[in-house]
Amino acid sequence: MPEDFPLLPPVKAWDYDMKREVRPVVAGLPALSPLLIAGSLLNALIVALKKAVPMQAQEIIPNLYLGPFGCARDIDTLRQAGITHIVIVRSAEESRFLREKFVDQGITYFIVDARDSPFENMIRHFKPVSEFIHSVLSASPSHKILVHGNAGLSRSSTLVAAYIIAKYGLTTDETLTYILTRRHCCAPHEGFKNQLREYEALCKTHFFQEHAISNVATTAAADRKRALEMMSQPA
Image (cartoon, rainbow, N blue to C red; front, side):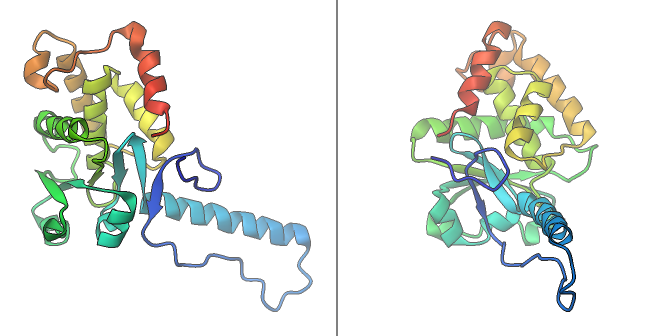
């Protein structure tokens, strides 16, 4: 069963840095009421949760994870999660630290050169990235992919959304809403959302075989509910 994070829906996730302790400062104030202390603890928990979600990688659909680059910095963490392939989306400047660090350890990388800008041409990457994800996940049930950029908020979530749109035939809004249920900090630029809508339209035309995943048929509107239910099932 997937590991649960407190107060969040069941998702598979791993944390790369949760060593910081967050607690209210109550030393020297023994007269604080239990309700005040409880309120302070609750506020501290909320702060901790807000900090924790972006620092984790979540399983969006079975064997496909989305997260920040920090989750890909430690080979032991990757091995524990079973990650075999990594998609890195980065700008030229970010290539200094967003790099193929564990090729010698057996991790296969796919690099996407894209800036974190709403004006970046992301749609040109949708087909090759989706083809890569599809081929990896289809090759073996033991394959697991992590898609990450810097923070795991915009570019990487856009690429994961493009794959889901092509594979399951969902709309852009349906896809992004679904991803938000798994990774609550997902926030693609508005420009990226518009490009996803363009890609969605391409996937529904007779040019589908040119612009989306090969040999994967679009899902009719009547099948969207079934697709969402299938995506929501734990691995």
